[in-house]
Length: 154
Image (cartoon, rainbow, N blue to C red; front, top):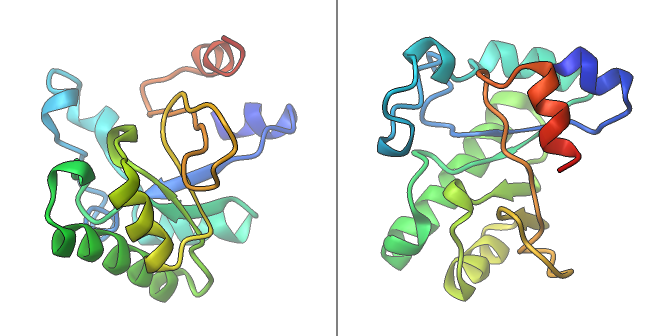
């Protein structure tokens, strides 16, 4: 998928659930039930380091892919700060961007993202110019290059 996007000049950013990157565990969440575990495998720190070395931006997707709006203030803070810190420690650079798991956010979560030190954050199908409610496109291993391109332009 990446080579096709790179040839088109499409910027690539990977958002990491830091709690899965240690061993590339599949993202086994109820919303993806029924998908093949191999298609839900996450990237390891070594894979992420290789992508970062090629210029791919790496951002946070929390520690555990939690619905942030359903968590307590302390749990949200932990999800956001621990993930950011672990990504910075593992990859040796700044982690300035966050993609809210499931695209879920509210004013409380956006405040927590600012307080954690993120410069911008992404939901899904957002409208407007709030740097903590920007749009993103979610892609998974199961998306073929053709499907990826269709998702970009629809």
